[in-house]
Image 1 (cartoon, rainbow, N blue to C red):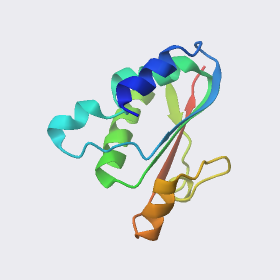
Image 2 (image 1 turned 60 degrees about the vertical axis):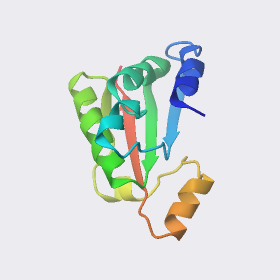
Image 3 (image 1 turned 90 degrees about the horizontal axis):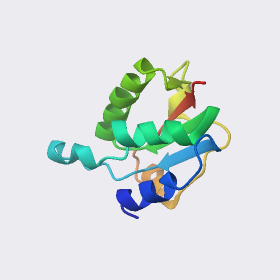
Image 4 (image 1 turned 90 degrees about the vertical axis):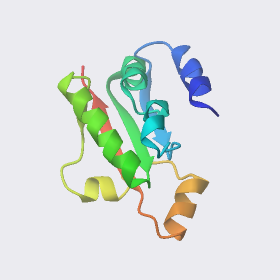
Length: 126
C-alpha cells in the first residue's frame, strides 16, 4: 500500500476514535531527497495525533537505523508541540517489544537476518 492510500483511509476515521495506531516497518526511503515520502513526517504525525484518543498510543517498529534517527527527530519535534510523549524510560523499552505489539513477516525476517528492530511507543497527550 502506498503512503497516500493509507493516509486516505486514516482521514476517514473519526477524530479521537483510535486507542492504538501501529506503523510497522514502513518503507525507509533511505535517500535524503526522498525523506519527504516517509510516513513519519509532520503532516502524517499530525493526522495520527488527531485520530488517537487522549492517552492513545502511536507505535512504530523499524529495523532501519536511518529511519529510527529520522523518527526520533520528528517525534522529538512533536513532543515540543505537546502532541505526544515518548514512553521509553530505559533502553529496554525500545529494544524489546512490550505487550500488544503485532509481529509482521517483515519483522520476523529482519530478526532472522540479524537486523535489530526498534520499538517506539508514544502516548497522545490530552
